[in-house]
Structures are given as C-alpha cells and as structure tokens.
Length: 460
Image (cartoon, rainbow, N blue to C red; front, side, top):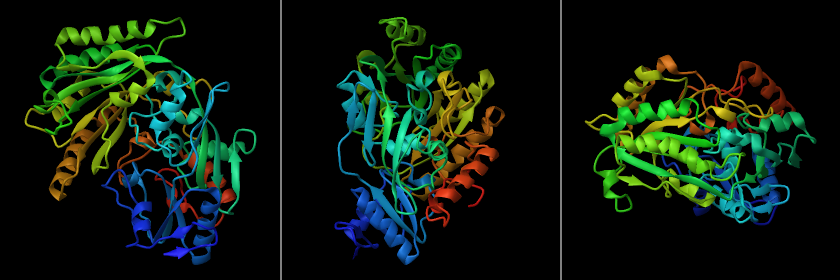
C-alpha cells in the first residue's frame, strides 16, 4: 500500500483489504482487477490519486457502486478510483434541486426529496449509484413524463486530467456539459452532481403478479393500453422465474409468473387522475385473471423503490438488452415462447419496459444522449452460479435476440447494457466524432481513455 501526498489517500495493491474495498462491485459477474485502487472521500484525494497515476504511468478509471461493472472495459494498467464522497444529499426545495455527492445511492436522494414533496428521476433499484446512472442516460418510471434522467442534470462537479476541480454547467462549459450527459465517459472523475426534482407528494405504484399461463392475454392487453397510455404512467411487463427463497412469497416462486409494475403520477389536470389512469391499466388485466399478489396502491414516492423487487445484496447477473419498435402480435408470441417457457428458462427475469412519451420527445435538447426513439426496452437476465448456468443464460439471450431481430432498432440504453461485448448503439457517428474532439481538449493524453464505453469513441 502506498500513501500519497494528500493525507488519507491510500493507493492499494491486490491483496490489501483497501484494494478489495475499492474494487467491490454489486454485479459480481464483473469483478474488477486494476493494477491499483483507492477509495476517495474528498476532492483533494481524487486529485492526489490522479497525480499519482500520472507519476507512475497508469490510466485512471472510476466507479462507485459497480452495478454496471460487466459493461466496462478491462482495467489492465489502470488505477481505479472508487468515489465515496463525504457529505449528505442537499435539497434546495425552492429551486427543486438536489446536490448529490458521488457514491450516493438513489435511496438517499428519494428519501431526502420526499420530505419536501419532491421526487427524483431515479431508476428501479435503490442501491444504484446516482452519478453513473445519470451520466449514462438513466431510465426512470417517471421518464415518460420527464424524459431521460440525464436531461435533469443541472451541473456536474469533476476533477479533470490536469488535476483541476471544475463545476460544469450549461453556462460555464456548454460543450463539456453536453458531452458528460450520456457521452460515454472518459472526461474525468465526477465528484458530485446537481439534479432537478419535480413535485410528487403521492403516486400510484406497485406490482401485480399472475401465473404465466395467462401471459399471452395479459401481454396483449398491456400492449394495447401502452400504445396511447398517458405520459404520467410508466410501467414494465416481465416474466419472472424466481427461486424458492425465504424472502420471496411462495406464490411467486412456485412457477413462472408475469408481473406488471410501475408508477402513475397525477396529471396536470388535477389530483385523482393517477388513480383513474391506473384503473384503466389494471382493470382489464385483473379481469383476465385474478393476480396471485397485487401491491398497487396510492402511496408515497419512497414506495416506488420497492415496486420492481430488485435485489438488495450483491449478485452475479448476466443478460442482454435491446431497444424495440412496436412488436405486434407476432413479436409478442415469439418473445413469450422464450421467456415464458413452461419447461423453464435460465432467465430469472425478462420483459419489456414501456418507453415513448418524453423519452422520445424531450421538452428541450439535452446532452449527447437525450432521447430514446423506441417503443420498448427489452432486458433479460439470469443469475450466474457456474459456467454451465452462464452458458445457458447466454444461449437463451442469443435466441431472444434472434427472435426479436425484426423489431430491433439497433439502439441501446447504456444503463441496461449487461456486457461490454454486446452490441451497443446509443450514439451516432457524428456524436462520437464530436465527443472525441471534446475528450482531446480536456484529456489530451488519454488518461481516462479506459473509462470510455463502447460506441462512445472512434479512438479506442
């Protein structure tokens, strides 16, 4: 272990407990093995780590929670900085803005904002790090009303390759601000973000589960509703093959189930519209068959974090992702053949996230990635137990990809990508060229080049 010039900055090597702490990831399928690693809690520690990397000839990588670890590039020859910045979430209720230190998970922001009757454009998992999610686009259940989460970013604090701490916004450096929001990384180590909030004291949220035998009729009804659903509603439909664990209700682990979950906001026309919109969705589904479990209710925004039933402990996950056009009856049948297979599937969860609305038509231009022009985000994933389970997951993912090829847009949402080897297409060739130019300006030596995600640079 090396102690560098800033007190408390420890550069750890493999085998050191500090190295293991800095390289810890939530998705255990993507272990990180850099040459050295450090956990930074202050801006000065980030700056000291960058100076050390330059002095010894290492590249610099950054992460916080490691949910997307398998989607990153190998870290050979790099120093990894894990950002766990000191400080709490700060809410400016009058401006509807949250300042969030890097390393903070969404649960803390949701709780802090809810105390003021406000909500944030968070994802479905409370343990996901705010910074990585926001700067990679961010799909929220609120996104059909408020767009990609990256569009809500108002300012970014980071340390660039020259060791300078900067606060970047639309006024101070508009092109770097554009690049940071969805541009694929490689611009510096982000230490904090400011993100806009919106009023939402109460919402309708939850999940309903049915035996997968009803999946064809349920999917058909959900798709018909989704075609012209109000923008205040954001939902997903998944087939789940859950293991018999103590924390999972037996009704959900006795065989494949279909789940419809999500959030409905009140419309601008007045209170009570959320309940009416939710009834328009759930009434026809409940008429097809009675759910074996139904948690949909009017409640606080904090409950949205529980709706999707995400794991709260690290786990090894592998899967695949596509952005799809409207799949029609043929595509729906092909999808269900593979994810609702009565013989069983290695995918623990697989299905469609509803897009459209402000995802495709943001109210104002944003960063490099500011919209998703697709009807659905497909994702499917399984738990990796051993080489055999990984092979089975990959095989099923390949079969789903082949079946859905006629409706594949060729685009992707970065936060849904599970593996760096998967096809990615969230940026255009023109955008990639512009991002390369901006990286050359702020990082001429390519110190952060390893942090650039696939489909984000022509120079990697």
